[in-house]
Image (cartoon, rainbow over all chains, first blue to last red):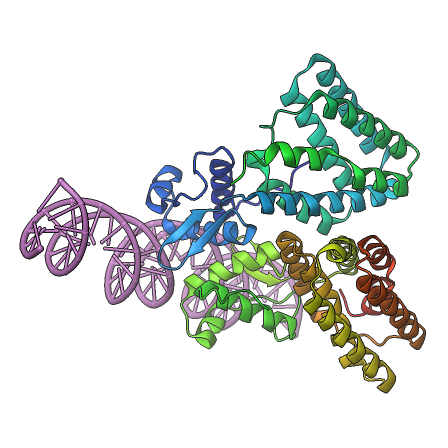
Length: 217
Length: 217
DNA sequence: AAATCTAATTATGCATTCAAAAAAAAGGAG
DNA sequence: CTCCTTTTTTTTGAATGCATAATTAGATTT
């Protein structure tokens, strides 16, 4: 499912720093303590600094000349912009997936859908959101467009830290669930056009944004 | 117009290596000679290697364990995938630009449009393609979505090396020109919906892909 | 005691060094 | 002469070192 273990030191380090940021251990706006992280990871500054360059490019940190790296703040605007782009990418993914999705992938998505429904009924929001997220990701993967998948995953990474924290209204829940029903239906019919248009209208992001806006900045 | 000069050494180096790749000085599949480039740029290996990590993440090179960086090959599939995503992003940009574009930006695009027409009439393909490209970029910028702009520019960078090399049919020319007329019209009306749908159907990419496929891989 | 200036400390950016791995070159057997 | 082995050279990945800039702590002044 996930990419092949890349076994580059800077890659490992980047992932761990991303996690620290996502978990809030490194707070937005705070400086990234090179020395401390080096000791914690048991590596020298070289691979850590390489990782920071990549993370800066990904938008997780920003580099200030002679002042090292700070954890980037996720502003309301950036969050909104990111969701806007992700939604558009999902729409494209849906269109492509309609034509390209395999039976196994479809079955997997259906399974996730029923799991999601179960969590909806039982009111388990965390698990619901996780399944929801996995469905969207599976559709993106089913597009079989590697560039799309890469870009989407990167954007998804960036907003990870505000994900799964929002309290959503029950209105949203039922709405989102029925939209998901329609998505599955479109997928079963291999109707990419339909799926794409459902996804591009899908409220999820908009609602999530308003709920998550509180978290950001 | 362009971003603030970031004056980081690895950033400078990355840019120059990107240029070398785009210009074909570093051929696809060939190894990236660290030592030589360091001498050429007058820097040590540290910033060069930092740059390579970033370039790897951008898809310009790939890192092989203990074998350094190779210039990534732009396969037909990757090229097609990239255009697919770019087209989708342009459609989103068009929609947003309709609502957000400033008078100055619109005037600039109109000017570019007339330049493009002039190059069309005079049969100057290079200049035509450049103006064409600039129009599309200007629409993306007018979207005012920084995330979208960043992602688009990055993808555009990646395919730079095969741009401006294709021989296009005259059929395509007239078609593309008339679509551009419609785009300008939609922009004048601030009709994002219309502009978005024109852009998402815009033949440019598809045709370019078939013309450019020859170049890739 | 608050504010400003100066010295000590620490962090940063980049160059250099070093061990391990890969590539290239030299040698030997068939 | 070709193929395989062994040695030498080069390249790579990562740690360390060093000069400079930023931060902190302390002294001085008001």
